[in-house]
Amino acid sequence: MINKDQIVTDYKLIQDEICAALELADGKVHFEEETWEREGGGGGRTRVIQNGNIFEKGGVNFSAVYGQLPHTVKKALNVEQDDFFATGISIVIHPNHPLVPIIHMNIRYFEMPSSFGLGNEPVRWFGGGIDLTPHYVFEEDARYFHTYLKSVCDSFNHDFYHRFKLWADDYFFIKHRNETRGIGGIFYDRLTAGEELTWETIFEFSKALGRSFIPIYTELVARNRNKKFTEDQQLWQYQRRSRYAEFNLVYDAGTKFGLETNGRIESILMSLPPTAKWLYNYQAKPGSEEEKTLSLLRKGINWV
Image 1 (cartoon, rainbow, N blue to C red):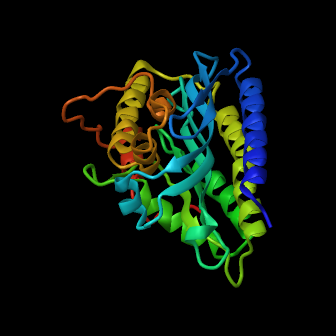
Image 2: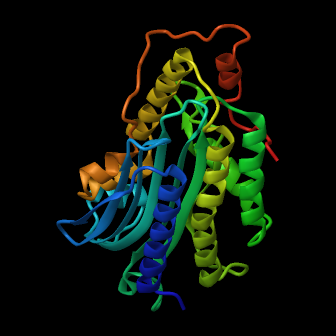
């Protein structure tokens, strides 16, 4: 039976692997690390990369926290218990190139003590996901991204991709803009063992998803990093970043959980881009690549 110590150890290893590979891909800068402790229990390792050859700002963060859940979080999770343990990795990368996409991934585990569960079993679940936010949607890249994710999902359960892709479409939706944040990906929460899934299988899926990050993103970076771009395309990048910031500040559950459980502010807001612009009533030109991208920011597109 897996336990939280094993999950912490493996998640830390995945954080190390991802940071090493991203440094190699950038070729200029290295991650800066800050270790921190949370008042109330636990802490983490925040790792940030900035002003690189291709990565303008990014973070690969690990945390393992415990303590008492605030009332607002208990209500949101629909639980009565107070004590909790949560660990995970959260990643956001903002490139400096408008033709290279923003990417986000997280894998996480949540547990409550066995004394509050049924019998001797703790209340626990896994969650996670990975999604892509291109400034310009290239259909070939979108198909590659979703095909890769489907292959990871299919190696564990043939229902995973369809279920988690729909979940991502719904979750990464900016309601006040009536558009998706990007081209989606997969998203899942409260995944537990049952008749067809063991805890070991779910944990292995979580790790496989975490380790899919590097082959996926390094391929997409390599495809696009050497393409030339214009000032107008850079301005569009900053405009799209503003939508990303809006989603994370208004809707993102991880941001809310971190703030409401007294997490480290710099780590929580690491996901925000270094530069973004809010142009008043911006309208894409008819027939432009910008208009095409906007037309593809909607739910239900079958990329596979």
